[in-house]
Length: 486
Image (tube, rainbow, N blue to C red; front, side, top):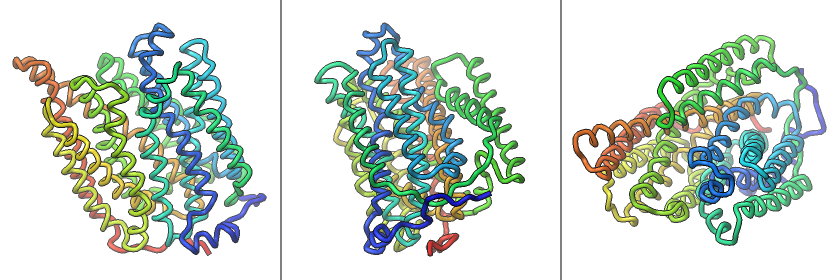
């Protein structure tokens, strides 16, 4: 049942004129800014871990949970957002996301114990998990189909530059004093963004009234969290423990999928899998999953190499990889404009080829490879990913009908979390197994590590080749929107 609320289905006249003149609607600028702030926090605590280990007397493995809990909460909450965004207004969703994020930030900043700090990080992540699907869904509703590529390119700023800046920003803040200053910096920025957003944000689309399936919530939350946790812990825990955790996750996720298919007949699934009946969306979903496996898996390898083998600090590592993230974000809008004119294939196919070549170049890395060469290859890799992600996001979601936008963005976000965990786990296993084999053959520790790293990057390059093949399935020409905006 659809109930009209005090919302609009298309942008107001001001935003319409903005779209007509090639300007990004204000509502999208607001959501991109807010998303940037919340995603920044996914990586902002990396440099604070040594101090937290001292202040709370915890091990490095325990401190790492500050990042793990963020990822696990995202994996648990994102599957719910498709249902949630259809049942609340844009302003309500924005308010909930930012207030929850702000509450988590305040709790973390005042945390008297490590457990409370972890809880604060989890609450932060719950707010973050709502923002990206909200941004994607709203963009598809307010931006005309002919201009979506350029506007979607702006979203790249939030999803690529923010994580790249996180370690560098936290490193600078920590020069001033306690790790609590990180949250003291974030909180007023988030509060200001919330106040500004609520002053200017308009409701978009229609809301639906319908019951929530709590069984679906439980299956999705526990299933995806267990699956991502199990995969992310490969190499840190015994095989028996992880097999059980991953097995439980797989069973719960399978039960969730089966139950959603059953609920679709009643029209109230938590995650509507009818999105997969749209060919271009299904192709781009698989393509994005494989690309994220290679991307996030490879991105965990580079810091391991730079810090464990080359001896760089977390701040130095963050500064080295930051130009690549910035390049990816800056190129996003330009890539989007090309997509609006020429379609996806002209960008994605060359981007996937260059991605494979860049990962192949990293497979030749040595213990004394010049930093300038590492920086150059990393920038090339991130530029190639900009050519892939922006068109694929736009093409995939644009293939859906408006009533499926929120479910499509939710499924895309969920699969990114799982694919990232799979890619990271697979490449770490390859790294460790090859390194162990070389060590047993008598190779020195550094040489064994480099040998394992090379094999792991080769695996990433193979994923890149799969992306090349999948990109050939994309439509040769731009296609019209599933449903006209007018």
